[in-house]
Length: 348
Image (tube, rainbow, N blue to C red; front, side, top):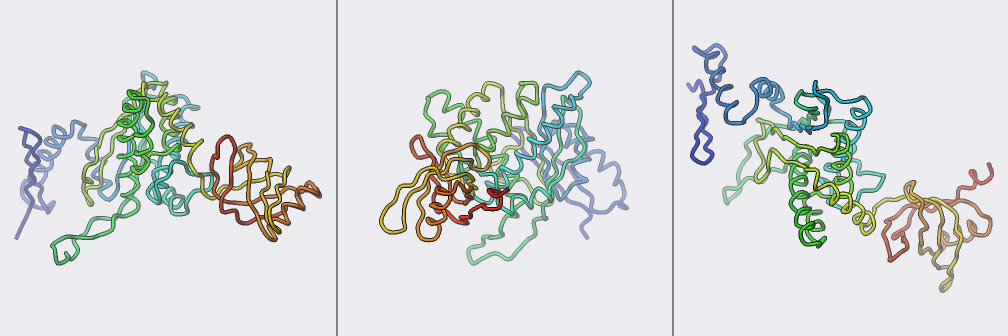
């Protein structure tokens, strides 16, 4: 009967070995645990207390953003703390949105699956060492499944693990692409990084955390759920240094200027009509798009075009949803839907 497992990890010329007993009642169990923690402390370059805490979350990935601008006693101001948690939420939401579909920009209305993830993940107790947030993302354990004829396993990655993996890869990619863009002046590397989870929303959240850190940059440590293992080709320690922040700010601006925003609500009044054949034409709405002041052009037909004509003639507010994109110096809403006259608001 097997009473333990022997684990070996080799990094370069250094090899770490531990014996993990299966039963707490086995002879020498406590001594083996002490030896295991000592080896892990050396191999992972972190304290045994932190390792023990992580082991208590065997079925969760843990993200620890480290803010360098804390006071000497490891605290931060209430205002910075409030902002840090808000921006950490935005960071996780950007990764969850990318796990649904990578995009340059996510509009105000986020995918339902991404929003549900925020109810699943949670904040843990912050750590000392500057100021370190703790974000816990529970994930189901990895189980052995039957292999196909070629001996390969095709188990779908849980959404929670995909979200955290994409976050780690996106932060690494935004750093690599940002430095390449800074060196060459070519924005292409940043655009390529979109496929790896980089977006205007991610850039904004990273920049905001940098400012919460007293403009001293942010480090991220990822601890992967032992029950699922470490994902391939993913770093566990990534950083956003201060010199990268201007590139991220400019990248966010460009993404917002050039990216297509899906499911955007346009609200305002029609101030220009451009009739085409029959009951079809382009209309220009002056108002807002997801709360941001915009003048937006939309092509409508049939009953929807008739509503736009009423909005123009009677100065009645109108709303609709669609895909917002920058077209030269103007904004265009593609695939408009849910066109509604807000007559009640006008009467009031």
